[in-house]
Structure formats: C-alpha cells, structure tokens
Image (cartoon, rainbow, N blue to C red; front, top):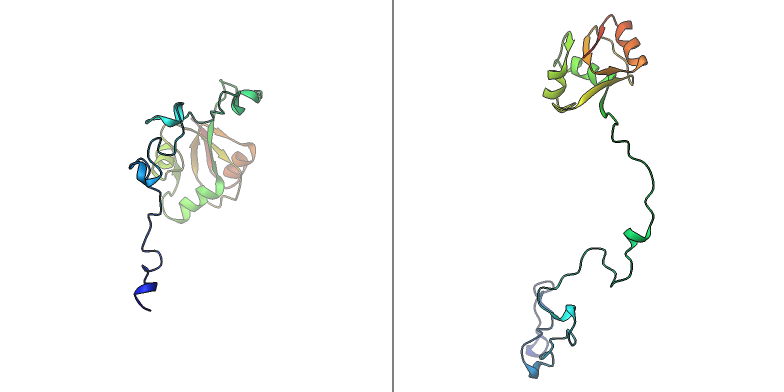
Length: 150
C-alpha cells in the first residue's frame, strides 16, 4: 500500500450521487438533468399512484366483477379445541361466556361468536355464543355440557 492506491474501507463511503444544479462548470447545471419544461422538471412534482401518462390506467381498464352482500353477517369462529385449551390452561372450569372470549382475545367486544366443530371437547362446559354449528353443539352436549345461544 502506498499513497497512489489509498482508498476508503469497503462500505464506508455511500454517496456516489451526481450533485445536480450546482453551476455550469459541473456539467449538471442549468436544468439539473431534468430536461426542459413539463411537470417532471418542476419542484414538488409527484405523479399519482397508477398514473400512466394520460393513458387509461389499469385499474380503470379492467372491468369490475363480483358481488358484495351488504347484509352479510360476519361471525368470529372459535373451535372446540380452543375451548379445550382454555380448560387445560386453567382459564375456565365450567362456564365459557362472551367475557371469556374477549379476555382471552379469541374475539373482540363487537364481534359475533360462532362455535365451530374442529377438535374434541373432553370437559363438561356451559358454552354461550351467538351461533353453533351442528357438530359443535352435538360435541358439547355429548361431553355433558350445555350450548346457550345468546
């Protein structure tokens, strides 16, 4: 190594940008490499997302399709194995109601709860919810419990 081949450590120098608009002598003065006139040459310019230079944008060219039912009722599904897990962790012993779902973050305070039939329930529980699937209701009653519709 000698003075003719000194260079900074790898990765220590970042800025390799051309400094534009700093006088004619730099070769990037005048228009500062932005060309002449037009929106792109102005300060503060930013094009809209999806703008295609005046061509009809993709999101307007592609036809709309499908159907959204505005009257659809969304339920937060909770499976039987989740209830069994609550029993095993000592969170509940005999009754599972809406406050338990909210406290354990299985549902939010504004949601409607539906009990689904995945997994098995080994404990006798009194389960309260807005809806039950047939298999879930059968499994709760088979374990000696009770399914209460809110």
